[in-house]
Image (cartoon, rainbow, N blue to C red):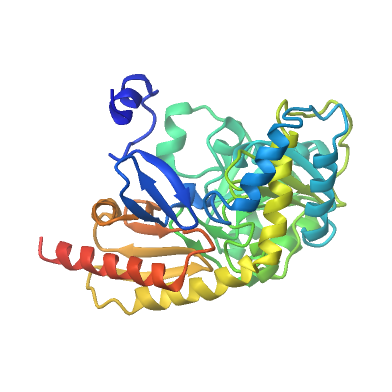
Length: 389
C-alpha cells in the first residue's frame, strides 16, 4: 500500500491534504517518494529556519539520542541548563527566565496563565485577525470565527480590538486587564503589519495600567523577520514572549521568555511532561549556534527584501499587494490563494495560504537567490496561466 493511501486510511481527518508524500529534505529543498524535488516555501509553517536536516543539528540529535532522551524538570539536566542560559542571553531586555514546553500553542497557554497569576486579573485583550493556536486558551485569543465557533463557549474574559488601532486599544485596556497579547506580524491573519507606534502604545498602556504585554513570536521569532526577534524592530520589550516552531530545527519545542514584572511563579503552578527534554534542548542549543555562525537573521532581511522586490515586479493584474518582513512574505491576490498554491505545487514549489486571498511564503532562511529566482519564475507562470482562465 502506498504512503498516501495508507495515511488516508488511518488519519484523523482534521487536515486538508496535498497529494504528495515528502520523504527527504536538505536546506531549502524537499523530495517526494518519486524523487521529485520541491523548493520549500512552507518550511513546516516557518519551522525549518536553519534548513531541513542541517548537519550540525542532525549530529546533535543523534548524539543526544544515544545519551539521554527524557528528563523531566524536577531533575536538572546539562542540555537544558545550557539552552536556558543561551536563550536568556539573546532574549530582549529583562526577559531572563525561561519556561520550556513543546509547541507555540503551549507557550501561549503558559503565558496567559502566568499573566493571570501575576496580576490577579482575568481579562485579556487580543487582536482582530490574530492567531495564537488551537488549544482552548490560545483559541480564545485567536480571532478567526471558523476556528472558534465549533468550540464555543471558549475561555471567558477575552476581547478583540483592531490590529494597529491605538484608540481602540486605549479603550480596551482597563484596570481589569491581565494582559494584551499580539503578534508583530499577523501570519495566519494575512501577513499584516502595524506601525511601530502601535506596539509602543501597547507597551505604554500595559505599564501604566498594570497589565502584562505578551508578544507571540512563535512564527516571527528566530530570525524569520530579519532580527532574532521581531519586537526588536518595534523598539519594545514585552513582559512575556512566546516562542516555538523554529526553536529546535524541526523537533517539537516551545518556550516563554519571562520578564521582571511577572510574579508568583512558584513550584506546581504549571508544568510540562516533555518540556525541556534533553533531545529537544540539544537540538535547540545547536540551532542558536548555527543562526549566529551563519548570520541567518541578517540573511533573512537581505533575502526577504530581494524576494519582495522580485514579487512586486511581477506584471500581473491578479496581485493587489506584496507585503511582509524578512522572509515572512504575503502576496494579496484578487483570486483564491489556494488556486495559486496548487499551481505552484504542480511546478515544484511548496507554499501556504494566509486567509482566502493571501499567498504566504516562509522559506528556510538558508534559501539562495537562485532558488528565490526560480520561485518567482514559477509564481509568474502560475499567475499568467490563471489570468487566462
